[in-house]
Image (cartoon, rainbow, N blue to C red):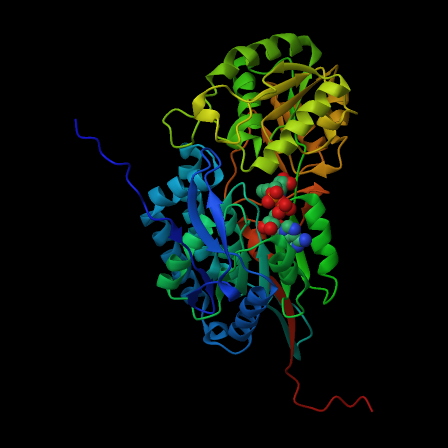
Length: 498
Ligand code: NAD
């Protein structure tokens, strides 16, 4: 019988976008990008350093200060963003598949992300023409109004958990506002951002307006945060890195927005719709392998239903099929990297040592299909004490900590007992109580009887150490605009002060 030799596909070498050209890093260094589910080599990407970041920043500076970009109208910028959205929609299938291969998430989630990324460009394409200032009632011999102007050159640094979507959240509002940008994707997951480069070129942005530079935080990221030529840095990532970036930005007092981590409470009251709460608790914790800043990683459960709810979750959890994100039916992929799996497994060990009760998972799934990937089973710790590290620190993986509570006041106290303040959920059929509790929660994104849905049209960001500033919605574009007061004298006579 004739056997077919395995199909050999050449490994693609990507280029990044600097000053309107697709280029390699200075010195030609490349980084291998592998599939976290299989270890397969997917692509090679430019491994830039400070020199490359400096070139991109200089190009963005030139494009802002002296290029044609400043003369574009809001309509022009809106049209460019619509073209980017069209480009993403036309390639949505391949972008989603590439996201799965690079990052590990299940295909259905990546398809959702690609559609949402296009919608984000559409939202800000439309919003570009709706930026208005105010006019003020002032004395009759003068006129005063407000102009909104782009902040300038923006360094944008994004993480690995939503690579394409985070690129859209950063680029779309900044470009709509008329800024120029240098985007740095995570060194682990640069592929979909690099696939955006030809889409951005096709759309027709003037040279230097939008630049994408790949490479590590040390060097490229640091340069964006430190450079005196950058007017604003927008960062999404861990709180420790966020703190460093805020410090680095003080050199020229650049504007900073930070979208950081979370240890988000998901509160289930005894009067919740039971089945909905079970589904909601699992989805909140395990979507995207739990690698979600807003994951409901602390499940606070009213004591009256605690045992029953945990039992129902354990019954349903085996339906979470693990595997390669492109395999039909898979609901949980691998973690993004070997180092990240080490970190998550480290926390599982800590949870056991601290005396939390491991009731689900805790190990690696068995079977040949998992051998070469960074898989961890969905894991639940029950009877977690609020002082334990697994209740306080962001694990950023499929590890859920269940904490029982006695009454509403205790639920609110436990929920707010964290240095973070990104997201929170509440489950109850008593809507009055639900809204009352939501108002008590110190978090920027909240849900009643649902978890995770969020909209490009609504603000995203955290209280406390989950960051500052807001992305998305009308708020998102504000972060890329300066506000100028304009006063006009309508009196032709001299002032006569002296
Ligand atoms: P990370 O902080 O390690 O890295 C994020 C980005 O910063 C990467 O591009 C990295 O290369 C870069 N970087 C690292 N050190 C840097 C430095 N000193 N200077 C400049 N840039 C530097 O985060 P991660 O591991 O990629 O992502 C996970 C974290 O992101 C989690 O804490 C998660 O909660 C957070 N996150 C937050 C949101 C949000 O909207 N709040 C969304 C997604 C992820």
